[in-house]
Image 1 (cartoon, one colour):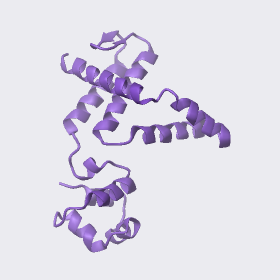
Image 2: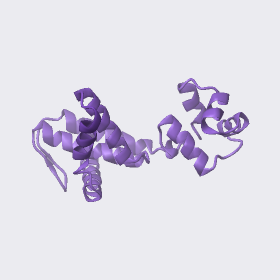
Image 3: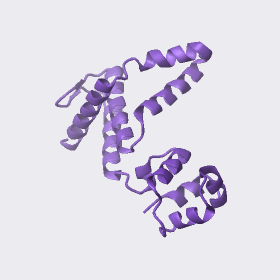
Image 4: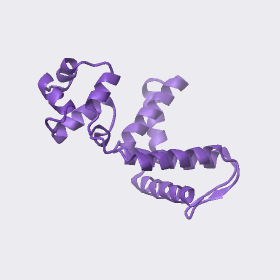
Length: 172
């Protein structure tokens, strides 16, 4: 099942307007929505970018069960005030350690949704800079400094930590 029609209606966009925006025909959009034709990967990517979702989401392949586990684990970690330990990490009763674990779980969620975590991070940090009133060159420096710890090695470690938290949750 694809979600093109659902996303189009949710965003209050007509088939004709979506066709213009994406460079497709209205007829092609109709075929895709009615499962009469399978969109090519580049078409799915255009649609995903426009709607701000992953290709897997549009195709109806989002792993709802895994996302539910991530959300439930995140909720447990954020709300719980007692120390917890996975096989990789320990959360003491500080807000900082709960925030780190929740951030690791969010990275796993981006992975499951097939979203670029670097792009998401840059957008979030940019919005945070806006909230703080940081502009121009100072904003670019803020984003760069915030990204210094966002290395591939740290990302891989964070994903493994998140998976360990999921396992911890499943074993409760």
